[in-house]
Image (cartoon, rainbow, N blue to C red; front, side, top):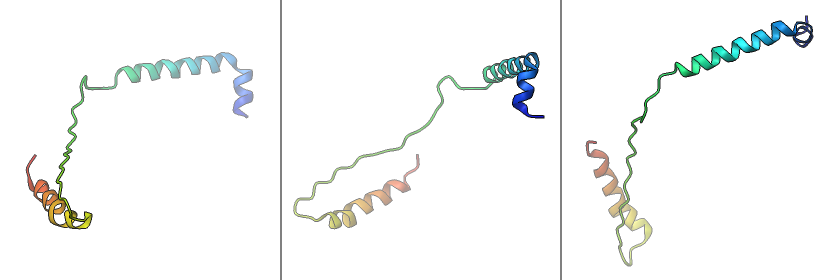
Length: 76
């Protein structure tokens, strides 16, 4: 039997099934555990190294890579 035809012919059963699903969904949603203030850490840093007269490649090779490798070795 076609689901649409069944829903039209048996309106009471369709309405009760819909109501039960909505009530069950509401209770399931309210029972979900959640933290008031979830903890998450964003690790980010901005380092500015002015090197007048140096190209971007030179700065990346001599300064940026060294600083990034040193910071990755730090704990926390």
